[in-house]
Amino acid sequence: MDLMKRLLAVLLFFPVLVCAESQPWEIYYPMHRDDDGSQEYMLEFERWEACRMMVFNAGIATQALAIGLNPENLDLTKDEFLAMQRKTVQSMYDTSLEGVEGRMNQLILNIAEAHKEAWVVDQPNLSIHQDAWNQCIQMDLSLFE
Image (cartoon, rainbow, N blue to C red; front, top):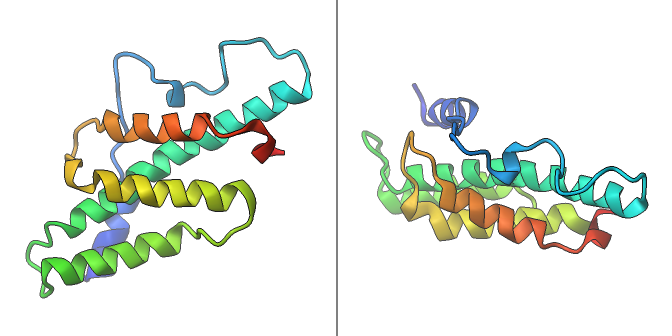
């Protein structure tokens, strides 16, 4: 199987976290308040949904970089493979996009770089997901207009 097929297989079959206790990013809507139909509630809902996706994407990006740290059975050095993985991840999360999307993509890349050494295959990586959630949910609501 060639290298790109391996990467695609890893990314497509990203393990799903199964936790006994629900994390905020596993909840489909902000439960700490009722829908009052206000603009603020709608923006909060938009941010909640965007942050849920960002948590998932931060996990994928971190896993892709972590794989680059251990390129077993490949004809590349660790540095070459990590550089290739980094380029792939950066192409997936375009930071030049305007508005909140570009900002969130930059957060995803930062989290992936910061946590790549801590990634554990087939284990809940709650610190990575919690970091992504904390950074995202603190973003100003006006960014989601």
